[in-house]
Length: 251
Ligand code: NAP
Image (cartoon, rainbow, N blue to C red):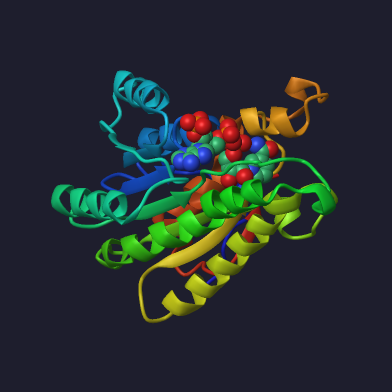
């Protein structure tokens, strides 16, 4: 089956009608834009993040726009232990009985520093939030993804997760790990499930993370998160059935 270039994808208005999609880091930046965009295309989104007021603001915007009311999951992925994950799974199971989409988007930058001086505690924290939490969440949610007709899992990579660059430390290494995790999970689910698993590299995008990584950059030098959504919609919707194990660029 041939697939279009996801960057030029033109989604139907009701592309995600009836789908239940969980977005991590949904309170700001690219995650908030993805949640709004998925909801605008008909999905019920579960907004996962660590800051209640940010999640509530995205929730209220989605409701005010007349889209399906989202659910909130306030979870700090740096600290969450088993019970937080078990509660989340139980709530999705009882409310929806399945999960059609999972966007792993939450991440932290850590510090920009040479390996020789990189703080070990920061290293653990970045690896935990960016990689280990995505593994645990995927592991716990797989039974609900399997219960959907054609579930889509998207991991969020970065160009420094494909080619290492000086001073990107644990962030770069975590994104190499994310690419690897996505490949392993795609291979394990290929052919024997209806789950597809892919990676997206958003490219430089105008968010708080970009500002802290490049403080001297002119803010409008990079696109707004809302303008890079075509590949996210393509991978979340039914037109990407059979597209798995790929890592694609938004820009
Ligand atoms: P952002 O504006 O900093 O947003 C990151 C989100 O992750 C925030 O909503 C944040 O919540 C959440 N988060 C962080 N730590 C968390 C934790 N412990 N538990 C739960 N949620 C947590 O960054 P962004 O630019 O939108 O980045 C989104 C994704 O794109 C990331 O995976 C990033 O690595 C990737 N990416 C971004 C760029 C870019 O240029 N922007 C380029 C390549 C890749 P709070 O707001 O509550 O802290």
